[in-house]
Length: 441
Image (cartoon, rainbow, N blue to C red):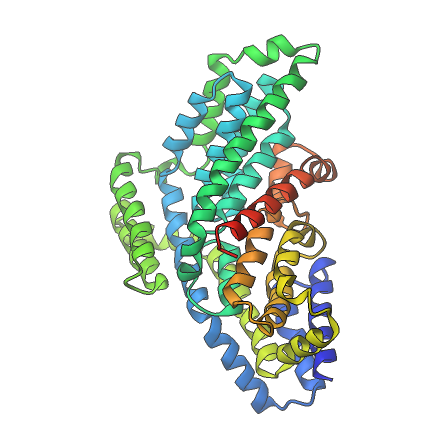
């Protein structure tokens, strides 16, 4: 009975998320509550489940709040703009170089872990360049999406935080073994950019306007692209003269996160305070910056806390354990030790048909519960599913940031999915296989 109710909770939650009938917060709070009541648990027991779940994710939620605020303040100062402007200048007028540069720019732009910000910063800047060279805007969005997906493994981005919520632990501790995968992923996406750049150049050369498109980018075109970067925020908040203090702060914060002498949430608290003191000493300006970025920070924290209650009911009630035990009895024994790898290899298609929240908060707990029964470490299961899925977020129509990217580029969502789906999925499969070879999974 517990298995049936637990599976029903998960399926109903996933269905509500897929069909957009409820927000993640609503679905992950109300559905398990009703399920727990149907299973016969009283309010005292449900309170215990709630407390178990909240304790599990509280540190993660706090870290997300202050990480989003920290990177939001750095974004306000224009900290990332000089790097991206330099990359745009370097890629002027060469189709292959532009494709490789797009991958590099997407990687840098996603250092803050926010998909919407990444697309807002990169697509308006690069789209004039793509149009002038006759390059496909679908290629632009795809390359930015894949490179952003690689950087989405950082602990202040969504997937790693969701994993930490499910299996417990600090997002930074979960992230550290993923650093080699990120390095490999960056190299692979640059290679992919080169390959697709050659393919795009050949395509352009077959068109009637190939010569003009492939060779001519005027100074005006370059100026337009650079201006779109500079105009991406409030000019009054730019602090270009403080680029080096901000760079030192950014590098120091990453270094302390890797060193890990303090909880990651506390590290981001300190980082935020220093960023505000360095760039905006005026108290009212500091409060304005916090108010500006608080909606994004609180939304992500609310989703994480809601996931805590969802997992608290499923785990505390014994539903996950019951589902795992019954699944082990049903599934062929030969499949169980490799179930996490199978799901990881299908991570991108799963993100298309479910959603990022459903994938991590509904599917991961089930797979982890099943594989742990046959001796697979929780971290190995989590890494397989994360690495297999992480780039898929930016090809899924269920991700709001993808709609933003499609709108900014002026392209069609259906055609974008057809254009890029197999590239995303193929890239994901290669990443999972490499993770197995180097022992991350």
